[in-house]
Length: 419
Image 1: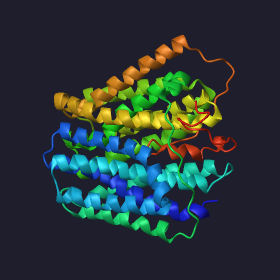
Image 2: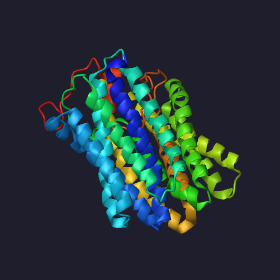
Image 3: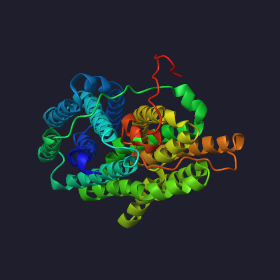
Image 4: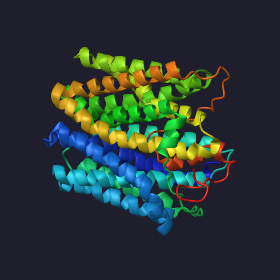
C-alpha cells in the first residue's frame, strides 16, 4: 500500500531531516550571534504566523501550478532561505526569513498531506497516516542530532540543510505517479468548534503556547543552563521521543475514559515537571534527560488527544473543519507563546521557559476542572477511536482520517448550504 507514495515519503524524510536541523540550528546560532531572548522569541512567533499563512494560502498556489511544481517552488525557496540566514546575520532580516520559512514548510506539509490523502482509501489511510507521523517525528530527531557535526556559527550546517532540502526534490520530481487534484480551501468556523468542544479548543491553545515556546526557545534554555552542543541535541531529541512513545498509549487510554481526565492528569504532570525543572536547579544529565522525556510525554501528546475530544462532539463530515480550526488555533497561539516566553526568560533567566510552561499548563488544568464540573459526559462511551496526529501538520492531514471517507464533501463558508 506504500508503493504508490514511496517517493513522496522518501522526499518527506529528507525534508524533515533538514527541517529538524534547521529548527535547532537557528535558535542556537541566534544566541551565539548575540541576539536577545526577546528577539529570538519574536523570530519564533513570526515562524508560526508564516505557518498559519501557508495553511491558508497554499491551496491557491496548488490550484495554479499543481502539486509537483508547488513542492519544487517551496523546497527551492526554503533551501535558498537557509543560505540567506548565514549570509545575512541580522535580527530584522531573520524575522522576515523566519516568516517565509514558516510559510514554505507549511505549504510543503499541505502539499504532501493532500497527495497522501488522494493516493489512499479508507482501508489504507490509517496506516499511511501513522507511517507519515512516525517519519515526521523520527526524522526530526535525526536532524537535531546533525547539529553535532560542526560549529553552529560556521557555514557547514547551513549548507547541510540546503543540500538535504535540495535532495528532497529528486524523488518527487522523478515519480511517475499521477499528480492529485487541487487542494480544497481551509474552512474556518471557530464559533461552531468552540460550541462543540471548549475543552478541545483550550487544549489546542495550551499546546500552542507551550510547544511554540519550547521549539523557539528550548535551545536557548539548554545553552543558558550550560549544555554543550551534544547535550543540547540530546535534550531536544529526548523531548520529541517522549511525545512519540507516550502518544499512542495515552490516546488508547483516552478511548476508554473521559479524554478530559487524561488531559487533566497529563497537564498536572506537565506543570509539576516544569516546576521541578525550575526549582531543582543543577541536575545530573541522566535526571535532566528523564524529566525532559516525561515532560515531552505529557505535553507533546496533548494536541492529538484534544483533537480527538473535539471530534467526539462533531459529526464525521465536520472532522476536517474541526481539525483545521484546532490546528490554526494552535499555530496562532504558538506565535503568542514564543513571544511571551521570551519575556519570561528575560525576567527569570533560562528557567523562565518552564515558569511559563507551568503557568500555561496550570491554566489548562483550571479550564478542564471547570468543564468537568459543569458538563458531565454520559456514561455510554461514544467516543471516536483515537488516531495519532502530529502537531507539525496542516489541515490536509485530517483528510487522511479514514472516518471521513464515506461522507461527501461539505460546503465551505460562503457557499450554498455552508454552516
